[in-house]
Length: 85
Image (cartoon, rainbow, N blue to C red):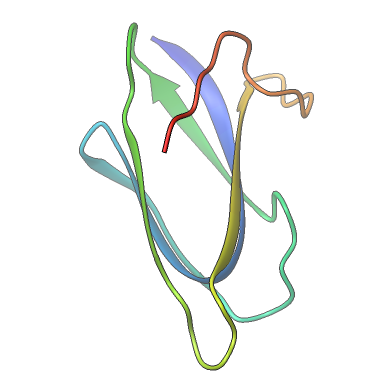
């Protein structure tokens, strides 16, 4: 297992699970900024399943972006990572 970092930008409310375990629950009603929330995570070998459950708050639409980077936090996407929705 390797340690990595997930960075989340959000306007609204978001819960994130990784392989069935809740790793983050965040609410933000301020300005949207990419990478404003950071969370250390550990990925297992093989496939890892992220689930993002979000909702809009007030009259603002839900906005979010998620980036997965290595533990050095260089800002580059994780090498070999694949996303599907």
